[in-house]
Image 1 (cartoon, rainbow, N blue to C red):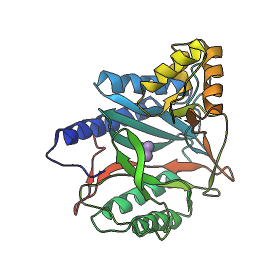
Image 2: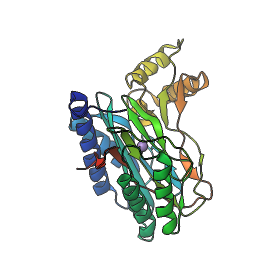
Image 3: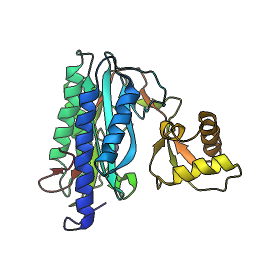
Image 4: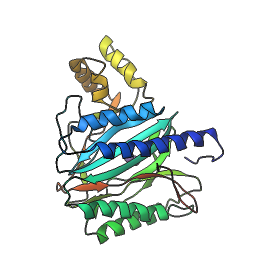
Length: 299
Ligand code: MN
Ligand code: MN
């Protein structure tokens, strides 16, 4: 979307972006060997609510070869130890979304991998000006990552942000895909390079724990209807199994999700894993396209 900088919407967007950045810093401070991944997700989501904002998508913490879309279950006993940890946080105020991500290297052996995406992001942000082609950003990201000796993940992309829509046009590629779409003044975009020590191509793994409402359809069973009603409160934004099992019995949640998926009422976003199981890093900011590009997700 293109945003009017004088509007109330822009104030909402700025708040969402600022809290997204603060939540990311908070999450980073919590990530420590021995700690449960789900604890950090819960804490960050509580932080967002406490700051008077809403959660745009479930806090995602993806480890090692998992590039994105991992979200632990309520009783998941997965712990941090020596992994490459991606944290991706989305916050919204009345549908105006801030999206940002960072990588923490608990392995202490992959500092260069982390630096590669930070550097690629910096290069791409510098190009986020009106009239610049999205493939030029892609080329800058690719070149920066390759310079460090890694592969950009080519089937993950940055994106535009719209009201209640996390992934709108334009697509911001992580390599030169020859897309000559140009950026526009005051356009809102998220740039998110991923670097891999492996293939640089991700595939959909399983099981999914992130879902979103696709198309409302009538539901027969009472408890499935109740769960669907809860899902509808998200206004199309993603939700996670963990949120539902806090409110409904686990077996009901599992049954409802399976049925709603089968009927295509909801869609799933499975964990995305590097094809060669290389380690993956990510960096992301929400940016306002201007002659002097503005990073909105700063604390
Ligand atoms: Mn993100
Ligand atoms: Mn994003």
